[in-house]
Each structure stands twice: as C-alpha cells, then as structure tokens.
Amino acid sequence: MIAALWRLASGTARSAQARPLSLLLGSTVALSSLALDAQDFTLESAQSGAFFGTSISSIDDLDGDGRPEIVVGSPGYDVDVTGDGIAESDVGRVEIFASGDHSLLLSIDG
Image 1: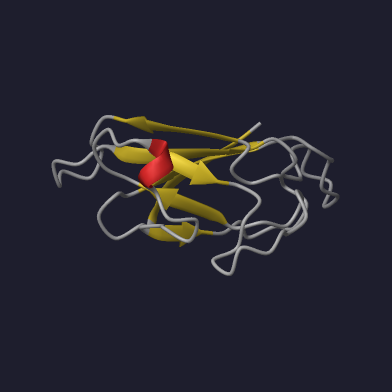
Image 2: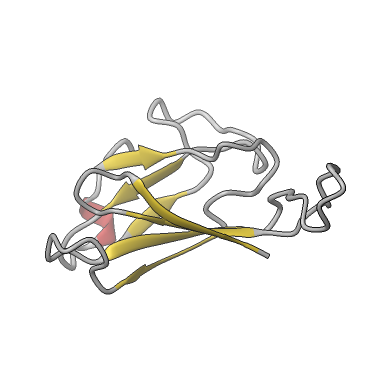
C-alpha cells in the first residue's frame, strides 16, 4: 500500500491539513515504474485540519470479504471527549475502511 499524502490527481500540491489520501494497492513494484497520477482510490477526511492519512496501515479482514482492511490515522482530529459540546483540539482519530467498497467500518477517537 502506497499513500500519496500531498498530491491531487492533477499533481498540484494541497495543504497538509486538508488533503485527500490517494492509495495504490497491490503487489511489490518498482517505485520508478509508477505513474505520478496512479491511484486505486482516494479517501477523504470529514474534518479539515485533521491531518488525515498521516499514518496508514492494513489489518486483518473485519467484514468477511477476505481482504485486509485499511487503517488511517488523523492525529489532528478534534472531538468533544468531555461531553460539554466543545471539541477538544487534536484528540486524534483512527478510521478503518473496507478494502472492497472503501466504506467506513469503524472510527476510534482519542
């Protein structure tokens, strides 16, 4: 799994805080053989400034389709953890997406 954190499909830069995460999945390849706009799909954060995609990984299959799931970290995600209606800054969030349809399976705050 290869992530292009600061690139749009057009190759233009986007800020580190509000960026899509473009992923290329598959077997081992020579990095020099990849096209700059190569991507299998793009995931985006629901919150600007969350630094979505700062960390990525895969985990075992959770939804029963036989494919590993995609884990994405957002260390700058703001969440109301105290219940006072005010989101605390940079609490962080981990989101798990299905490899098959890229749907959100689970999100964990803090």
